[in-house]
Image 1 (tube, one colour):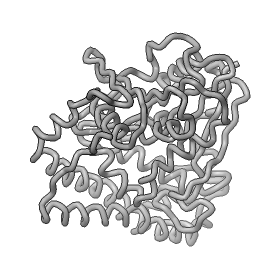
Image 2 (image 1 turned 60 degrees about the vertical axis):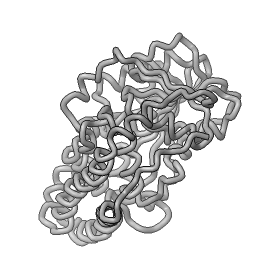
Image 3 (image 1 turned 90 degrees about the vertical axis):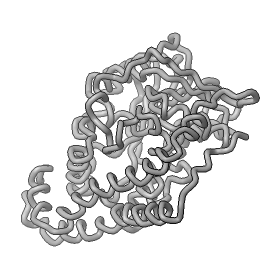
Image 4 (image 1 turned 90 degrees about the horizontal axis):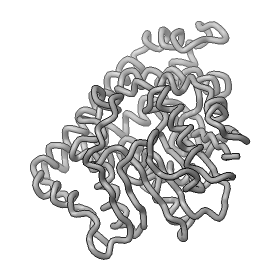
Length: 362
């Protein structure tokens, strides 16, 4: 197995990481109860039913939301800066490690396309305020290092990827494609569930894929990573049995989302499965869980440079799949320890299940 990069940290740097990481964990779980309590105490002031803007008007009057929103953005900036300072100090070593791919004896592989341009819809934004977006040179390490404190360690075992992988109906799958795979956390579960299958992780960002390749090798996972666009993969028709995507669709504009659905349909063999996982649609959140959660997701998308999130959460995903050619489409609520749904506790955005949409290629 290839060792993961050992990033050296001084005591001062580690103390800074611990402090900012602790604040990030508190942001995820500390403000939720206060915002929830304020909302429940004041929700009788709202119309029934109420829309997202009306909930926002109420929450803006409370200290918990106003400070939590301010804290969220600036705490992210502090975490990114703390990690980047360490990486940039060791820049040459980090670059050499990232570039040392496809070593002899590698289980999987990495295919990069140096001619592939950054999609136009990502050129002027930094999703989640991550510096340089997902295509900056240290993006993979930066993303992986911050996701643990952001999710309070509850995805350290790739639980999000496992939830969708287990929701895919079991089958004799020979080729599996994970779109928008990032560093591979949503890809790795398929290696364990279907050890005889060829597992492919696809992303547009070379920096994410380089780190994902090294991470996969360090964990003993055989993954073929490739740098391509999810809406235009270049693979032959009917060449996969499963196509999946975790947290990809809310980061795509509407026309591109539709193109990705059509591409998944083209790539799948008859009977193949297309499955995505995201937060529930606004309509589901408002009617079955809490209008507060709908507002918080909408507002964080606007505040944290996730500009396509509000549009996606307002979309009918079953219809989106059906318009792309899929049949037997269904929405499936998934277990979700992270937001406290069914487990007690209260995350920043409230308590609700993760939401899978699954369709079959006729």
